[in-house]
Length: 330
Image (cartoon, rainbow, N blue to C red; front, side):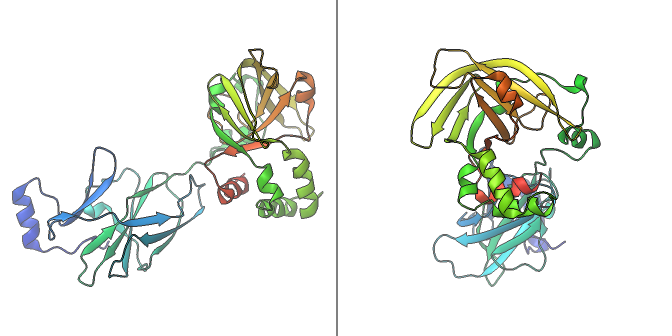
């Protein structure tokens, strides 16, 4: 493996004598969890003036990772080096960082294979001295429905009744956005095309029509806490109410699999909010939701019987590309 830095034997011996000194360009953890590189030759810290764009909120195993580095200000150098650190690696040990071979540009192309892998880019001058660097970025992998047979079986709706457990509203806590506006704008066309290719019933246009009816809602955004919902409507209005668990229902589906819907009932007199909120997110026991379908209204039984209208929400932190990537992974 190519070393991150070129250092002479005398420098290494000198650093060993000093005991606490770092090597000429090494990574050390600071209290605020930021990585900083010290350049012993220059006697000062390497400035973190490189910005890296393109990091996704999370990836699924096998997803492409495409990153682009840019500089802040004028730097008289165009010699880029990318490095990766395996999950759990010692960031203070320069030998733990692996030089990405055959990549001396400001772009990085890789594959999400290990949760927690870190990526760092540095800009070097003609003498291989580091003139600037980025903060390390962490590749987060979350496959949601997992890789083991049991998790996959449950995700597909094949589970036993005794595997189901009640869930608290905290499983859904967060800031969520509707995917309906993205569908209307055409941002989900790739998803619709893939679903049409895997369908014997609908082409792409019919798939878009189907999901337009399914996703339609005027609640563009919602914020959920451990005991409340706040709806943000497309016309700018907001409404909030408190909710508590009202149990769950296991539904038998025509395909032979099952679905669990978790039910929450309004606890106060705020009639601006629905009486019932009913979730379906492919999970059957306590675990944080990554997206969900929400059925809300006044008639509990009617909502449980609903099959064609299921407004769908993803984290508000995701952009259109992130939502597409997440949908295609399921």
